[in-house]
Length: 277
Image 1 (cartoon, rainbow, N blue to C red):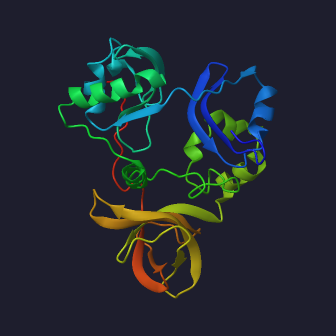
Image 2: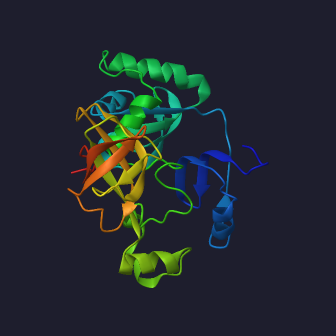
Image 3: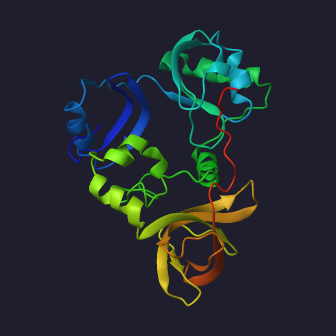
């Protein structure tokens, strides 16, 4: 943690009976802590000795099930448990940043290597180690936002296509931070919207210009890359309302050249979040 510019990397944050894991925020200014402290008792604990171990994909559950007595079939997407995995007491959430079923595990540092080896061994070579590049392509295919690129402090949930995160009670009664702006956007529509794109040219990167067919600027790319699943280049970004409908033809500017593109719905690849039957 650095206090000079209030950059915060929180490994665990417990708020009353809720847990938020692996939060990374820039220019936070602790405003959310100030407001939370007026609503509930707040306890924060910081730790650097619990690495975050992530297992994602269709083999995540059956392989981890071999290493714990907890019935993982009863744990649905977004839930968490404190439990023993491979003999280590861990904090496990059925979450991820890939659009796939999977788990994020905070494990004591002295047990981290053994847990990784156990997962690889139990999978019989079918689960492999990978890095942030693979995760980023998966989160893009799933249409998930990257903070600092696809969403910022000045972007509202309505503009980002995240209105589902605002509860019905909040939408009806307001009274929350930003309610005046957000409720107005919900009623009248925002001026810009986050959408997905297919590109006929090279993958457009962050800050690439988006133009309509007449060559007029209508927005900007926030994330882009090659989709291994679709075998084509994809991107997401913000365009002016009216140019956000699926099928709208656009020009994507990459290194000064215009390439044909089209607005498409997200996710690009269907998500596979787990819900118990």
